[in-house]
Image 1 (cartoon, rainbow, N blue to C red):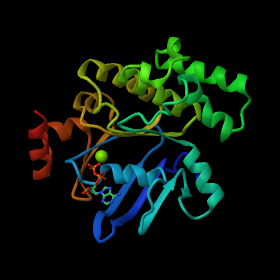
Image 2 (tube, helix red, strand yellow):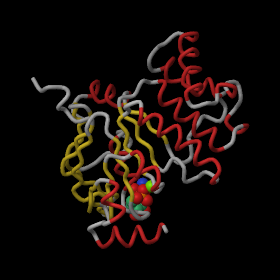
Image 3 (cartoon, rainbow, N blue to C red):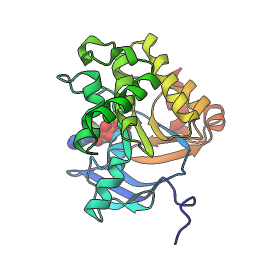
Image 4 (tube, helix red, strand yellow):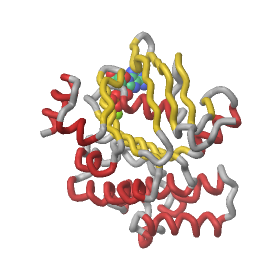
Length: 248
Ligand code: ADP
Ligand code: MG
């Protein structure tokens, strides 16, 4: 049997995906060790969201394999569902249920998917709302919160399911500047707790501080993977150099 500590949290081999005739992912290979933090960046349209959605099983793909903690997605329905349940996802636009309170947003999957009793689910939700520093917002509705608060609810909601892996797709790009920090602070704390994370973000300060590696995507391929210090000071790929220039 494989040593579980050697099994990567995420293992992607030769992943290809098409939207109709459009070849959107062109042979992605990516390994993410347990406890590591990967930042994915790259120009708009390069396939970052598609890749993240494939890892979370939200998108089908044509060729290649994705393994989460050794489980090959799509092979066995029960195992695939279990692997997906252990993956938390945070979207750019929060994707909270508008008709549910903050607390109900956080407890919904615990009750419906995990079958947890209400009091237990609510206690867990309150624990994570405290962790993202908005325990006082539990009975409000999403529309009554700022964007930064809504995104922290989305993070708390994901944490409620005890994920082994957290995926973030541009979690701060819909936020006003003063709210970006509060979300990044929560993400940084999560990283320091040892969470395995894949973050699509152009927040380069966060990448420098938190990431083990920066992955640069362009036109459906990973064209560079480097430690943040190397990536930001001396990106080796010309398109990465151009891209960093656009962020300044
Ligand atoms: P990124 O997140 O890097 O901006 P995406 O993964 O969202 O890139 O998109 C990659 C490419 O695939 C873009 O050209 C986009 O227009 C296209 N695309 C994304 N989603 C779909 C879809 N559902 N159907 C067809 N094309 C899509
Ligand atoms: Mg995207």
